[in-house]
Length: 228
Image 1 (tube, rainbow, N blue to C red):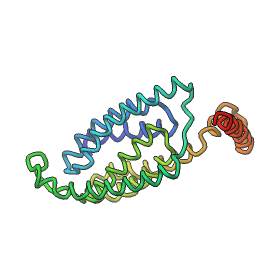
Image 2 (image 1 turned 45 degrees about the vertical axis):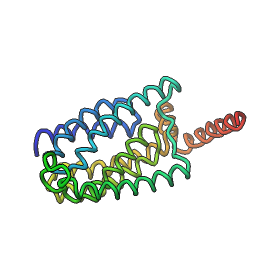
Image 3 (image 1 turned 90 degrees about the vertical axis):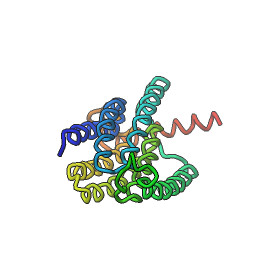
């Protein structure tokens, strides 16, 4: 295990824990982690993952800006939601199509650009597929869409196997931890208001927090109906 792998892993875990808690500091911490992983993945010929980190640099900057803007406009960090069924279907279809195209490209990239990619890519379709899934998940995170965690869960399951086979065992272990954190993040984002109310109220039970949350949601729905 290299120092790059260790430090990058620690920063990455920190950033995931922060985003599960909807903390805006996830973005600058994530930028540090991404920079280290960019170097690591290039060294072990996982070219799709290396290219992925370049995207993450830009996406992290955008997510940081968007969350700052959202907090300034609303004064809240807890408003997360699922996309509409139409958007969900379109996103899944586009993601799968792009994953297939990317896999074909990664399988031949060493022939097209031998100077930059001297060795054939390892597991090009799986590698490219997780890359595209991660692209989608990262963008959905910036927009605070709850389904982003489902994408991360799929990425983590594939990543555990892929990095274990490539003998990057510490990263494989990281993905085991990330799988658990993604499950926690999904649960947290499914009930953001309840978690916040319990934190504020201290002694509230789950049932009391849920009842109050439902009351607030009913008021919000009435307000939305009035403005239609």
